[in-house]
Length: 126
Image 1 (cartoon, rainbow, N blue to C red):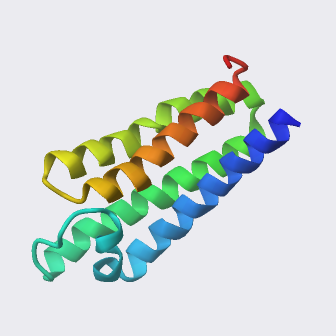
Image 2: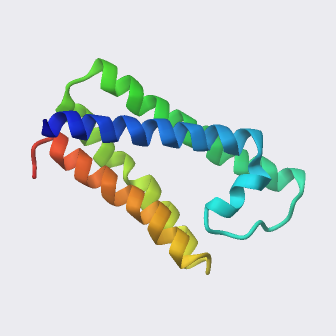
């Protein structure tokens, strides 16, 4: 039962991150407020940088989904532990840049914590 819950949460994270990435690709200016930082300027260069976040998120989400289909649970857990650096880094950047502390912790910090817990459960470390 624990593995079913862990795998379900991993799938939910992967799908959510992929959807968020798609939204950043389609409408980067509308999505920027969800990250926790203010938009520096609404020009084409800024939108291009925001779309890079979308590409990163889609790629990471798809990678987790593909790993779920092709590798054992332990390998998936190890990958989740490694990928948890991304939301941790995002949280650190938002906090270090004077962005929204609430969004940094409630979005990026919580995502990192969930990925760490699920990863540890999948490798049977906790």
